[in-house]
Length: 377
Image 1: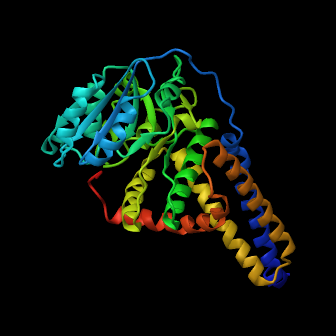
Image 2 (image 1 turned 180 degrees about the vertical axis):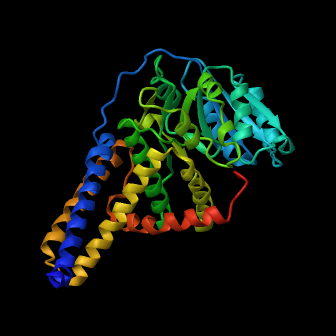
Image 3 (image 1 turned 30 degrees about the vertical axis):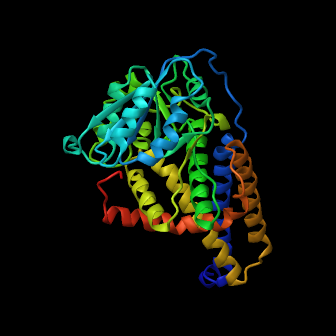
């Protein structure tokens, strides 16, 4: 009897049962969570123009500010200001901002020296920018970003009703030729699919500072970045993780509301950027870490059990059917989300990039925990 239970055929049957179970969990993520973005319907928006303060932190960003800052200052919106925090720049940023200040009355520049920053990273200069802002609605982006339309401010602020404290936008990367560009854009897209979908499922856990808006009063009420000042990164996702709840947050995904960022052109620079971003996940709330980890673990087991079953000679029809079902679901939902976020030419890379990040992200997280970085630039 014991020999029958331990026979190779019986063991592989148990593996198949486990494979079926993790496949169901994966299907649950795609159809129960990620489909919320895929089939997202626009909610009611405001038609009036609330005062908005756009806040941008910049360190040695002369060329990016020269190209992109006018696109923020020239937004088709009635009542807004742009606050640029010049964080210890030693290039020509000071001169450029002085020139722009003479041309644009809605530009405010905040200068401060690095030796005044007693904390690591971007959070202290960003806090100064928020403090200097005149308006209740704060709209954040980066110096290497540009708005995707002259109506960016209008579309983002139109989601602020009396019960709304946070609005998540999409910060995409520019499309260029090459494998690295597709890798970066895929990673950015899949992360966005997750945080948008979790928000729609009532589990908001992060946003990205390239396109993020919240109320100034909520920033002060929650203590700003005080609870995680010791962490160089996380001015966006950790803040959202701290203050967001199912009732006080909305998303905006139409193309006019997107920002477009300058994309990294070398693997080394992207690696450093990615490593810095991964340092904050361990500080998320337990329920968020559990949900995110469960997806990755079952994703790993899904591929692992499939390879084991095929290699063992188990009847390939059953595991292959589940594999195709899960792959077809992922491709369908991913394609719908791509259309929702106006991304192109990434669908066929899904199986390859999925496997790549399945191994790459854990290794990068381990590297980030050993070799810590103190600077945001």
